[in-house]
Image (cartoon, rainbow, N blue to C red; front, side):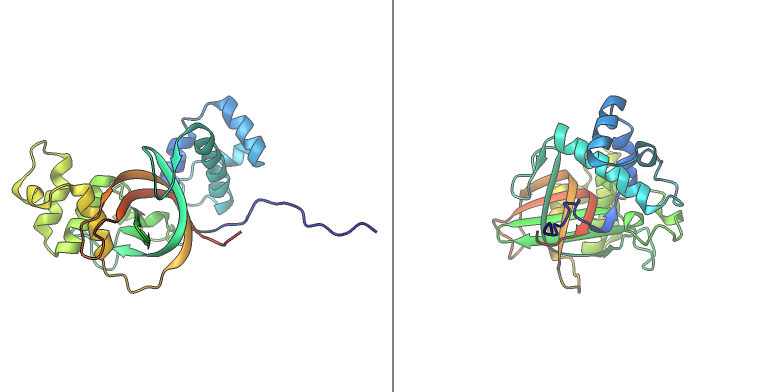
Length: 249
C-alpha cells in the first residue's frame, strides 16, 4: 500500500482587503498573449478573471481569480520590493499590523472613507491606506460616500490632515495641494505632505491589537520618521492591492 501524501496546493488566504479598482486598471493593460500564459500558470479561468470587478454583484471568486493573474504578472514583469527596501513600484511583506477606519473633515463620523493598516518591526514602519469600499464585507453598503478615490494620495493626505490636527483648514490645505502649484501658508507649515501623512499614521489612535498580516502594495512614499519614539525609523507609505491574514508556512 502506498503511503498517503498530501497534494501540494496553493496556500489559502483569508483576505481582508482587495482593491477592485487597481485590479481592473492593471488587468486591462496586460497583453492578451501574456494573460493566457499566466492564467494557465495560476490555473484560473481567463473569462472569470476578466469580469469587471466594479460591479458590486460580482462574486468573490472572480475577484480572487483576477488578483492571482495580476499578482503573478507584477511578480514577473515589475520591480517588487520589500518592507526594508520597497523600491520605486510595488512592495510586499508580512508583519503584525493594526487596522481600522480614518475619518476626514468632509465626511460624517459614521461613514469614515479610508481604511489604514499600520505596523512596526524594529527600525521599519509601514502604513497602508485605501478606500473603505475595498474592505471585504463593506461592498454591499451605501456607495454614495465612496465617489472619490480614497486610495489616491491627495485624498489620503486631506483626510490625514484633519484627522490628526482636528482642524478642517489644515485638511483642506493638504487636499488643495493637487490644485495649486504654489503651496499655501497652511501647507508650508506642514512641510513634506506625504511624509507628514506617514508620521501622522504612526501616532493615530487605534485601540485594536495588532494581528499578523501580509500584503502587496503600491509604494507612495518613504523616508525617515520624525515623530517622538520613531526617530531613525524607516517609514513606507503605500496603498494595497490586497491585505490578508498571514500564517507562518
